[in-house]
Image 1 (tube, each protein chain N blue to C red):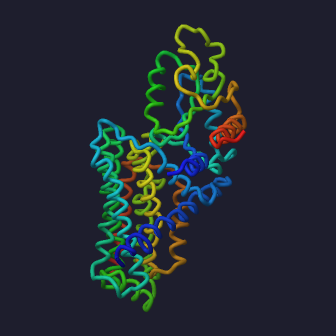
Image 2: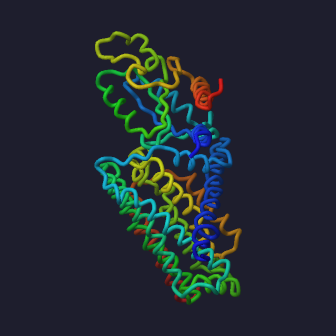
Length: 297
Length: 143
């Protein structure tokens, strides 16, 4: 009963969805203000979600309907579970098991896989092109992402989220060290690709491949996919704040603002440029940070 | 879900899909002008989407000719309902000087049901916003 409550209501689905909608509104409002616009009203993400729930759901005749409809559920279930684990670690650092950091990394990896599955199952040639882009992007950013997390693990000598938070509260945050700053910058760039935001949003580029991975989705499955993206926009800044700032509240907002500013000041890059960027620059810098952390800087 | 909530959510968040049916591109330029920061349609929840599966409104420009008549019919069938159709520009509304031409297939409302007409050659962005506001009022059942 308690587990069910935690999964569905408090640190789980409902809480993450509402907080994510607030974050998504902040994102759209700040984007609007950067472009000298008024921006959408506060309840805009809620209107979008409810409207999509009321629309017709179309499954294309060329699609594999089971995988096509299952992929948004898979994505949102894993995102919810990752949120539950992160928030339980923040609320009560002693409560979880050793190795929960690895579980969060794997759960965050489910979303791109589910998106790739759904796009490939839709039977649309443009969606398959977008799925191939998402696959390439995923294989490019995942290694620097894990290396930048490794810096916290090496410096604090633990793979338990609760201990990462506690030892940062007692002995200073990771961001105060050389390797921590480099790892944080690499982490910030990789989560931009993980969230599918502008410099690295070539998998769902509206202007060139017409919505990309979501091209055949409509109605409720599209609503769930969009909600999943909104929830990720909330929990990935939380994850960054746990890893590099010891779970302090202000750092969540700082990470969100940095994400929005990167999104608004960069054009979309091509897929080959993104892969070069992640495999060369980001990977070299993250390995450098790991080496620095091993030496003790 | 109850109908009033559906209508309210639909009118607060209209995602538009831009279908160009052999236009001369003036209407398309003005349409894209209406979506720029100067007119800021996002404050009404209006967004341009890339796929017709996400669309709540089809903005159709141009005089429909024999080449695109199948495509606009198919686009309308692909859009998830409820979906409204807006005819933008004189060509889509009444085919002005292309009427009775050898390759046009009649104004848009003879091909698919049209909910709103925005005349003009091309209509100004302000005219388009007025048209959308009238459409929202009609959807809500007001005058």
